[in-house]
Length: 482
Image (cartoon, rainbow, N blue to C red; front, side):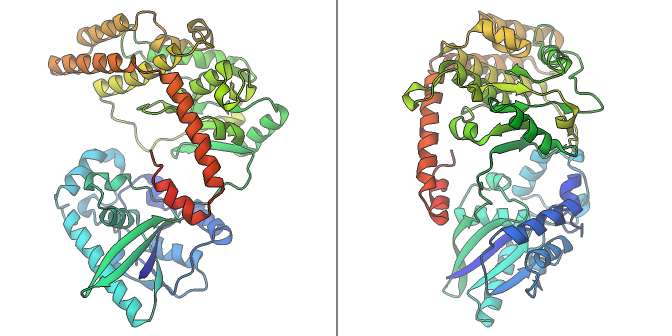
């Protein structure tokens, strides 16, 4: 059995600028180099007999940083996808999903390569690597390459649908272990396992940040000071700053769907307070919480977007109701959320491109989230609709109405009356049918009770994992991905 450790290169200028790097020889960023240096000192990579990399500098330089005492052999077959005329284009210049869907279906990129050409190049390279290993009496090798290469090998080895290729997670500086065997003169992939990720080492706090954000100097230290000064705090969230403001400005999408103005009203109140205020409103992309909270609360399932709000609401309901079957009493202050308006912990939001919003799609995804959150609230008793209205104008405006069926009807009529960007009225009719079918099904669910059941399973899984060795953990985790 041959083993190949597949490692993605470090954070590059292409990653930072959100461009299609492909065969462009972009370099590692300073922060990418620093992160690799930390991994080199602290992470235990599997030792192998040989060391190889793509011939592009971001991969070769990564290999030299991670394995400074090893001779690295460059292999051009393991370059990234050749994007042809699109090399260097920013993601804002393409329809990302459609671009890669077309490519997977066989479209050859002008002056570049099709998926079939890419696949054949990499598989040919893999067979040649196997021969090199055999010639050098190597049973194992490390290969530093690119996310496209690794995702393709994972997809083929696991026999996953091609459309899921770009859903395969590949972290800069980490990757997978591929097992192969020679059969009738052909190298066959047998199994592939994710390398262990750096595990928690007894940290007191966990931070959740989005990857299109920048933090100010002392951001992390200030969060730590807040928790040290307030041992009763379990969750603290803070603002985004975008285009020089922390407010959410702009017109509402519909006259009575006050999504923008109600969210801004919450923000205005919380920002003007000058100190930490209790809230059920918060940003998941700028969130800090105690490890004990993360171990006892989890994100509600099936939430299509806004999962950060759903998590904070679930925590607030845990505070109000407790989870008595698990010995968690109501009134545990760790599950309250505090909003800190300080500039020191305000994050700088820098998306690489403005999202092209399809209004009907956005409306449907948001409404489904609000239907699920409403059902969570409706199936418990400790936190009332009046409590919701007192803590968040935004959430009250989105799902706090007494007759939600009538409210959705009103919003859909306003789409017909006011949205001139929808060319076919039948799209609205289809949306209405889907939403009311979703509402009818959701109202049958004991959502809060199901959340408590999921929470119990979450705690049970942690107890089992704590007793397992790392390799066993990885095997078990594959069955618990959902």
